[in-house]
Amino acid sequence: MITTFALFPFHAITRDIGVHVAVTFLPEQSEPDRGRWFWAYHIRIENQGDQPVQLLTRHWIITDGRGVQHRVDGDGVVGEQPVVQPGKSYDYVSGCPLNTPTGSMQGSYRMIGVGGETFEVAIPHFALIAPAVAG
Image 1 (spheres, rainbow, N blue to C red):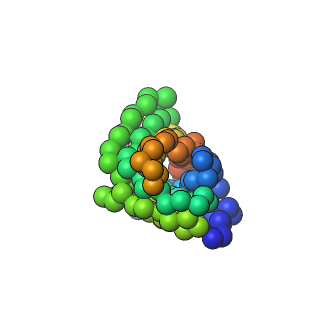
Image 2: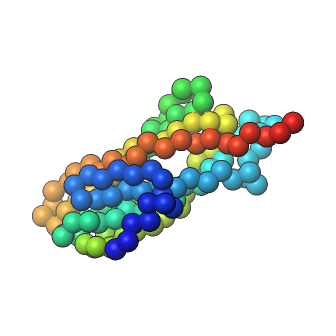
């Protein structure tokens, strides 16, 4: 398994589970004149341990540029509850709209191991920053 740290600038490792994040602003889905900015985030979950784990739930704290927080909780990610085998990774892409041109996200995944033990895995804090628009 090769971790591509250059492609994923935000990282957290909890109990041999690495969570790596890359963010892209999507101008084609944003409407600044209407107070809407949109980002895609690519997450790679790496199992650096010696036992498979399954992602059960997600918990996000999304903070807009005014400091207003929104919490998002749900089962799995993008409709899946993937099992990540030792030495393997799982990638997915999702998106986040905001009503401000800046913000941030962070959170956690609840995982379950082979023995039935559940545990939280940190999702690193990452910034959502729209590029400045020349006027």
